Length: 373
Image: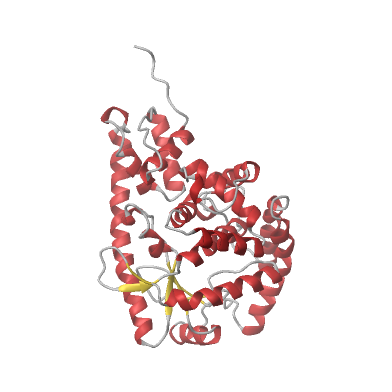
């Protein structure tokens, strides 16, 4: 017999994801013990532990990881399933409470995206983000009635009233650094809000419904969300996988053309081309679901950034966050980090310092900065 030829860990990692999401049917994955340990580490780093294990389940007994790796992996996935069940119940409960108080609310990202997965309980859960129908002043007033002095930023206010999960109340789902592009984006959100408030869905295992963004909104919003996190702290594959499932939903030619028109209007086509490359390379997204032509050069740089930084940049060794960091120090650090993306996305990088300065002054004027202890 010939010696087994083992795969590179990243090659196996991507293949297992494709097996899990149904875009690959070749179940041949050969790894040694060290390779499996690396794949497990990568899955945790990208918040895809349960999804990758779904791919592992499709392998033959001879190709599955050793017991000392797979047993803690299974334990982690069971924890993810329980956490999702609890978060689904909590999300419905919170949305029902706001509606009873006469406040329209839309559940963004998170549990709303999880329902698109082949196994909804296998999306690693995060916090609860709610887009409130009320204006900023009303939402901040409501939050500070229960949590005096709570911190406020441009798009949301923290609302730390739950033990089960972090809760954020949004006045707008996101933003862009460029004044003109942000103005256009906010107009889009205003148009999408009415239909999204009426777009109710059931979350897995829960009796009750929540409003979530329409598919039309998510084709743009989730891309903006990825874009935003790339600049602010880092982005992981979990958010890209959310977008993969959104793009694979039924979509007419007219709806696809409208999404591309909006991307161009927001100057997001270059970034979209990079994301399309990642969606094809990692998840095997078929050509028919692409919004724009993939860019191999920009996409490869984006994928390198994602694999280096991990979920929300939590594993990025290039980022040093000193304890007790002052606002000016953080400003210099984040602006310096953004310069890495200047060649690919100059508009957003050039506008970043101006937006950050304006944002600090705006928060200071309105009393939105955190209270100094």
